[in-house]
Image (cartoon, rainbow, N blue to C red):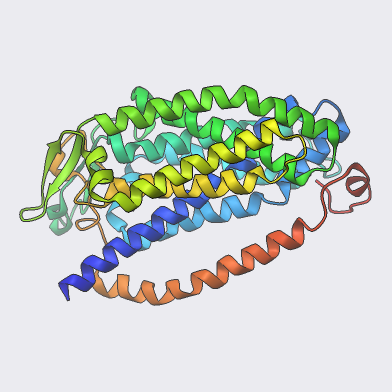
Length: 383
């Protein structure tokens, strides 16, 4: 029974990590929106760009909600601690995504009070803040947050609150951690790179494609700088380890580097992901006829982020460290749901491949034809 419980804990951390990795890939929508006025110089060009990302924004939004829902069901203590304690950070993230949805739907409506340009600025705001803040939120898995967990509080009639935040910033204190900002910037520039490669693949316009290839060069340098700096720093820093026999949290030198050494499959996964990202990126820059970079770099992004998230939780590691009280740090064993809940959800997860197959089918149907100027002019449902 205990071995089944441990397996399900690791299984659901894998599912949550996979959803998080897919979400980072789908941030190409936000990255593309951040380039709206950088790539689009005329109204016609900007309309093609908006309609290119506009046909995929639901995938990103749905994955974000599913990611949160999976965390709530499988690791409820994290949900109550992070989503309930760091609520200002998560509220800003959700607000920018809601703003994005409203902007797509209302920018071309007759009689809208704000005007098309204002809604497009909202899309750019989401394009910048969405990846930046999500990257900073993920960084707390490695650099921790300011919270205290006291499960004994459940017996308190007047205040049955398990987790409490130890300062009044409630998540915005992530801005005070320089390395969280570094990962946020890395995710932002990655989203822009993916957005540019998606435009190259999705839009049939030589001018836009040429500008996107030049923009890839501009965004590659800062992405590599921030990404490599963050990875090197994280692999060399002390990490929060769990003593299996006592469940005590202790500091271990080079913990995340040791995790890669102890789990070579994840190291191979990480290196393969990085190489695929670079392969798709370099071919998109160097070969004018190459248009499939988004798929190589997209798959590479999923593999890279998946391996990093698994390293954060596997091998007796506290995936959500507490800076206020080390022993309050969350692990996949002390923050998960009951055996019954995890087992029941495991049966439900059998449907995931069918959902992915439907997404693939819908994606192919939407992208059957590349976006052109003539198509946008004759499309009654264009944004």
